[in-house]
Image: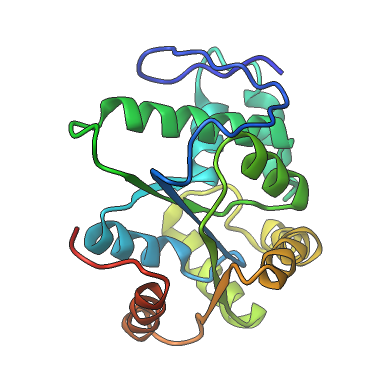
Length: 226
């Protein structure tokens, strides 16, 4: 597929199959953040950005921004996929993430500082995981927020009252739950077999959840307040 333009400087990146990732894991730390819709990923990502110096990239936010970009050739397609609770084609999502990472690295003031990225809501299925690991950057691990479906649904219905998001409604929520179980849980299982999953219960309050996240991050070698 053609490379998607960056919002700031229209840098274009090719998206061929590559044997060597664009970024080295020796200098770039990538943590995937997964959990069902309404598991509280965004709240915990904000805490990690504040305390650990991560750059937060939301795959969903990037897709929504692309869908609303006036001259996007993928905007209508993305809108239809999101409304149906389906996963947007892998090439589009991976390219948007690579573009965003490239822009962030180019704009950082201290070029000698290693960069940390939290990628929220990604990878949603195995082809995304394998493509990103091969062509963009191997991840350190997946931070998985485990939460009961009834609690996630309650959170989403409440969020929908003020979020303005088209997919925060009962019909779309059910589709998103089904999609997550069928496509994203195999990704979690795959990385768990490789010892690359940190599972945290997301059924508690935000502060309790974050206390556990900090403990687990420390065990993985990530210190606070860089």
